[in-house]
Length: 306
Length: 330
Image (cartoon, rainbow over all chains, first blue to last red; front, side):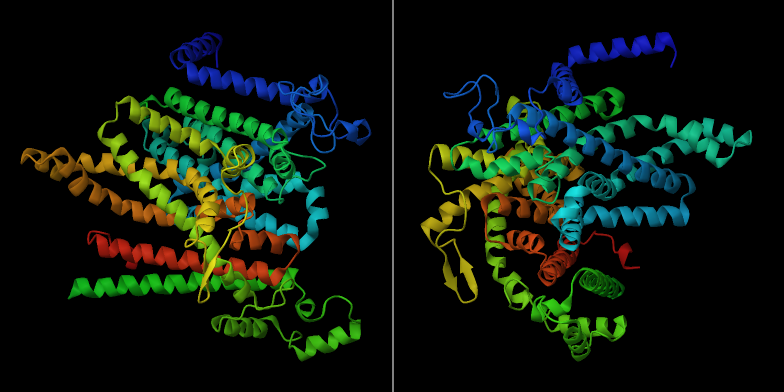
């Protein structure tokens, strides 16, 4: 993209954010959370993985705005005396990492299959569409739960906690490719009928060149929109799996694991250990979904404000 | 006559399809048992010598080729025998089915809440799209979809159980046994236990269904027959409810049926939060304790439920709407 065009894009984005303050706010919140997660090792008051720095005497201290709090722990502590703010910062880091990587896998599989199905049609199209239909009917969350459950039952909890990150990325990545495939396929179906594709074919470009140089760049907007909401879905799926004990282990907690491990303390009155990570998770998910809605209206004005 | 034949062909096609899907599920369950489970453990536990194990393997026919064993498994499955649970030392089908009433009543409670609110809210959003109320409902539905079901449950528990102390937070409470079915719907205690879990489960399904009803209604309102109804002077309520809503509910049955898998996943999460003694809770217990026969039985029975519901939804759509294309039959 050339300089002036990029400027126009920036200005356009600013104008759009001004017209839709909710979307602008969601973007800022998300940016803040993502930066905090990225620089967690620098800004977290404590290293939550360093067991030596924990003191059991500090356990279950309430957050700063409640009575009996300790200024060292602004959001209170959990059952082991771990600083909740630090644990949440590292937890967001893991949740975002898994969410984004899983969507990269979804996109890689889905876009490839969708492009092939849309471009070549016929048998390829039939098979891909059928597979996507079946997988969507089975519910992707349920498939992820079953897959992780079988891994856990087969290999045991130990092995699961060793390979939790790659496993979650692959399972959530494999579970949701059909949405990308459908989007890519319908975008291709629209693009292939256009004159520039026919022109490219006329000058003798190969199929591969046409897909890569012409169709893919022109199909990007809908794919970006889908990718945004899919990240929210992947983060939610990861949190659900971890909450069920089928995801990240307590030694490397994601937001879902934090919610799970604080759950029992709730009945003893220490609600913050489970509710605060829950609120952070909700904030992340709502921000991403609002941003996704905004992106849809911005990149794809034809679909209107609904 | 021809039409009748194609209806039969459609039904036959759907039934064959259902059977094939069931067969595929059983193949997967069998493969999981073979690769993860040790059937000897079902009978003996782990402190048995290698020689005794080999003896037992032969006795139980486990040294036969896999296809013979699979036919055997299939035969037993059709008679309702899917193995014995390690944990409960009882037939797995019996163990899982004993938990079915709890899950069913949870889903029933949530569905009632969803039905009670989604139809009026969806219709309102469709007929008065620009009112503040409609925008509010749609805005809330975006929030509702963004909040994971287990976080909703935890927030409800911390407010209504821990803080206010009004409602119980776990279990089913007092139940009454009617034959093999234990119900919590007949006691006040059981109903109070059901309230929070059902609310939680409905919170995640409601936004989806409000949007479904709304878009189905919007679709119907654009049709000619609605304009005709307006033209002949029918009252707004009559046009909306008697004409448009009746037709809008039809796609709802089909799309609702497709949501069953999601419903099962959300039920599992809700049962975990509220320690609700249903099938999902049992499944997770089986997973943490590696009870392979119990795990595979749960999967087979949920698969069966899935196949039955989807087939029924297809047949129901056919019965309700003669226009449903019979193309799929060919």
